[in-house]
Image (cartoon, rainbow, N blue to C red; front, side, top):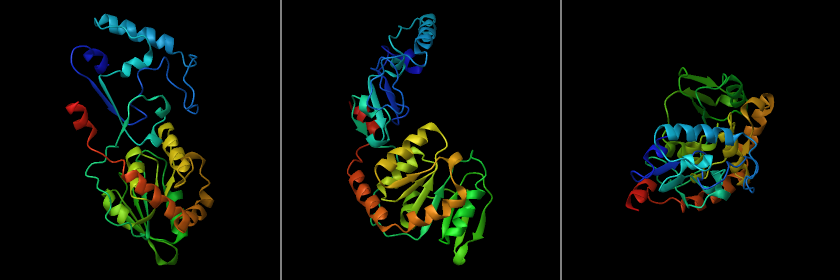
Length: 273
């Protein structure tokens, strides 16, 4: 709405990750799962929604739009993400910018950490099945999740699992982790990729499904949707990933390539342009 209101009056910039910075030139929105196809049929009733949008624009003395994706049109469009994480990549005409990672710097070294580091969203079902699986693995683990009570659990072999609501800077995660587990947040996935860390993704929504699939295609991760995870067998999967030297080597190699894509701040670049 803000872009539509400002269009033609002041310069506009659209900023987001691939999932939210939609290409404005398309006649219809693409369908996820069909990345190679330009949409030609209106399966989701966009024509009706387009009519409603144009009525609202007319009521506010704004110009109509010819297609619904034009809601996202701007003088400068910034998709701040790796191309691999962009579900609209095949349709995008602008180049990709580096992802937004505050105070990010490449880790000076990539030692093989000893811990499994878990970052979870606050709004998921109870995390006891995952903690139980970590306890069976018998490796030190750190579980970060907003709103949880601080506690320490003794795992198999005397290893400790620390459960905390206090966030860790990713430099600390990169130093301590041998494997990361998350729901597939774009920022966390980008940082783990740059750090060269294997990743177990447990997504719980459509965007994170796409992130998990992208990491899997890069051959540095495994993905299991949260509500479809085989919890009794999860310990075996975590252990296999944490002990997989070939997986760790691939993750480091891919991370090294990704580091070369980190560039100047996209907002500053857009302002200069």
